[in-house]
Length: 225
Image (cartoon, rainbow, N blue to C red; front, side, top):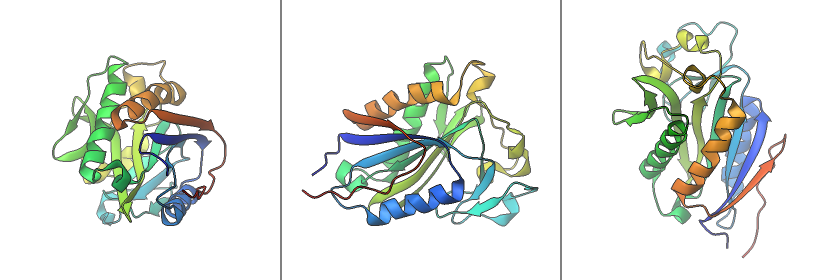
């Protein structure tokens, strides 16, 4: 049986949102107790995504950017090139914790990553995510099905932030957003991912991290004990 210390990390480049969403669902529904957990790191073309209970009034003026309904928690957010998206296909039962602990570990991993850039960041008790001086730099939206998580985080690195003005980000009117580039102009999605990966492995206790670079998402490999 696969251990809770094993993880596959796939670096996927730019992927269409709808196809990735469908593959996350398929991965989760078809995995078994022996399927190794995975983290997918990628970017999306411009898209607004709406949470399962998202309110339409928070989508102010999407213009030519598509709005995709999802089954994650939270309200509307924006994804676009220059934003590091990480999806977490984790067996929470095997890891031995619930979604609240998952959110805390994700927030702490991002905070530790930003600290390596000299950026002081912190989560907020009333709104999941990571903030710098009150401006959101990383959003979190998750879903748990059959004891396993999917969806994840959207970490602003070096992107066009103007589409956030077309929505109430995460359902908060006038919420300010920021990105790593505003504090560290040399930051790229690749370099931030290079810092985030070891922080995730450390905070989650993964000691066997298999990093795979690819351009397509594969369906889960169903293994037997």
